[in-house]
Every structure is written in structure tokens, then in C-alpha cells.
Image (cartoon, rainbow, N blue to C red; front, top):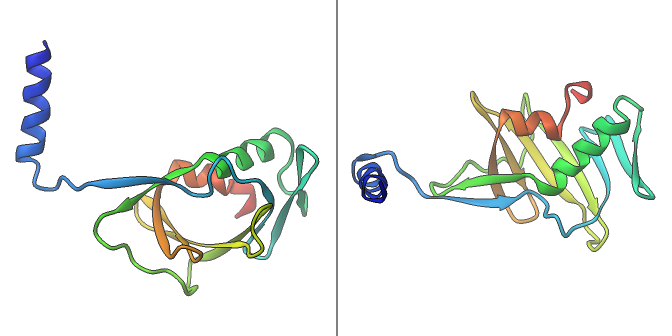
Length: 145
């Protein structure tokens, strides 16, 4: 059985011409403390003790808590091939600003949709991460669009 698995893995690497190495990285990091998050200058989410408050109150309770947990733990992929730089807003894009407890400057993210994923450009480290649409819907629920 072990030999079959080794052959399968070797075969995939040898004959897969589209095999590219990808690097996973966290959007914010689970060790960071989010103080506030502003989505497209329309919705502001603030930490209130151990809970969250959205203004206007479009999303609340468990949905808001799960959304903020996703922001803490979301991991995207950085394609080895250079991803497009998305530092300027254009049609269909929007900005999310995240204030962290240990940083003076907030993080600025620019969201861009593709056919099967969403690209998130972090202007702080000038890095673009790709996320599946399912993760995007957890980061920005339908209620906030």
C-alpha cells in the first residue's frame, strides 16, 4: 500500500506540468488583537470587551463573532508567480481597514473578485493573497455587501 502511495505522489509531481509551489500565509494572524474593522467606509465593527459591535447593526451576535474569528484565522495562498498589485481601487473593488492593538498604522486591504476566488492586497506588506470564495463569504457576509 505504501509503495502505491509513493508511486502516485511521484507520478503527480513528474507529469503535472501545471504543478506550482504555493505558500500559505495568514491574513492577520491569530496572535494579533483586532480593535476595529471598517468595510468600504460603510460598516464599522469595534471590539467591546470580549464582544463585537457593528455600526450600523447590519450583522450581530453569533454571525458577527464568527466573522471576526475568520479574520483572525484566515489563511490565503501567495502564488509563486507574481500576483497583480492591487493598490488602487477600481470598479468592483473595495477597501477594508483593520486597526490592531499593537500597531499605530492600520492595515489596509483591497478586495478584488476573480472568477473562482478573491484576491486581497495588503498595502502594509505589499502582498496579495488568494482566497476561495467560501472564505470570502465568511470574511464579508452577504449582509455587509
